Length: 107
Length: 308
Image (cartoon, rainbow over all chains, first blue to last red; front, top):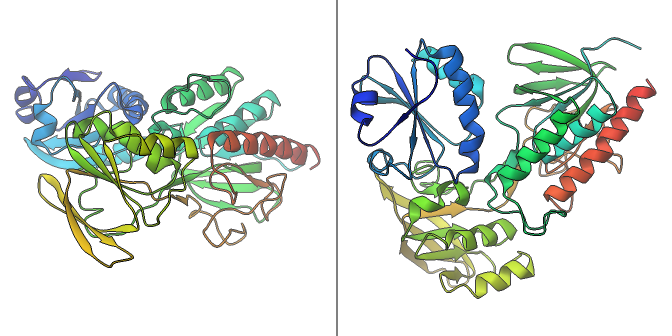
């Protein structure tokens, strides 16, 4: 898998996340959300070291309302860990890098 | 003097921790700041800070955080993402236990602050992230055109309710007394805002909904004992804070609510251990008081280390 965090949209959510090979992390965020700006760099850092374990993606909820709506998201940042098209884990709010590493390593 | 990994370890990266770090770095102490999540603390979720001097137009919480972070780093402050599990300050060398080892320091500043208190009502945990929120700036836009509830009567509850009216159709502000505690200027703005309806003498007793999120809430009037249901899509809870002091042992004296007791030099009950910011027992919790505390704590820690 490639390094970096792939920007996904309502249009390619199915192909990039649900039908992807292996686990996928989606970081639901928006430009107006302070904590999202705080967690973004952590996701970037993790993508540099753990991209062989999970595919890192992010979804701007302003531009793509359908996907967060489908998952009942009403707080951001929300991180959803997908495995074989299903939700394997979900975290709302700020979280330590070590906790994310632990989840990714146990997926 | 005995050897330690660091002169000073600062625990917590909110305004207090970053300010202590700024002062300690300028004092050329061998200092490290440990933050369990990301630097910023509670102000990250604050929409707009209007009472921190020097910003006449106000400043967003995240921007103020980033500026404090940059300023401390400019003088060489090292910041690491680490959660402190416990603190052993019985000896002259303080031992700070982390997930992957222990580090030692001559002095410690505890700046772990506080986090939003929960009400403990049915539905609060179940619907967290699905309508229940502690952060209007994170979640307000999800409730565009909706009716929401907010609980509380202090500065945060009133200011954030006003912020929510940018998006929502209506805010029911639920307050257990017959007057607000918030600053008068915030009260004036809330009373003048026709999207805010205050439910006086009222407490939230339950949050109900389905898989898709919150559908309604139950509110009890404490004077008439009457229960009423309100259809809302969101429920914001701002009922004060609880200290992040759970990792401390009995050596560090706390007040009856768990806030750290300090003297005017920010010294705790243990020599070489200082506390600053919202986590200490204090009559006022603001960014400006946290930074003030932290400057005193850092200078006191510097003097303590010099005299070892």
